[in-house]
Image 1 (spheres, rainbow, N blue to C red):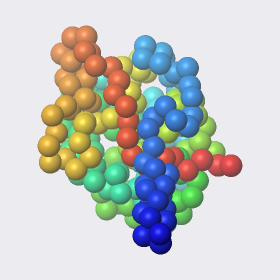
Image 2: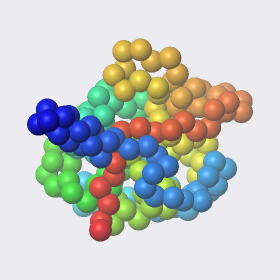
Image 3: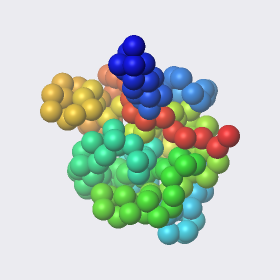
Length: 196
């Protein structure tokens, strides 16, 4: 009986940790909507704006966490995306909206893993506006801040058996002037810890 209780506790903890993008925040911010320029402070306390950080061809906003094992599994892929697409005029902007993560930990994680700015979404204002629920979760906007893709980076948390590169496919289509075939895919990862 104790084993069953432990197993159920572990299963419940896993479901609490892993969330899907339609569970928590709901938003009317859909594909084709235009995101207004926003201001957030970065991890060094400097005020940044979307319009100043995006590239000439847009921006990939990725909701991050310093503690989430799913994000840690994606860190290398996220950094590679940032490197590959900066040269193509699309900049990556990290967003941390987790109210429970200490700034020192967020800074250390960013310094170790990323060469792009990480902003702090205090009070979950941007996460709520976009309807972001998990980390990592992607919002790719054009040069005019129009949402072109929302959701998962790819279909494999481990990175070992990727069969669908949702974000890369969306980027390549957009940058070559083609319609994006798949504009959204369910994001998966750790739930964003919102202010209560």
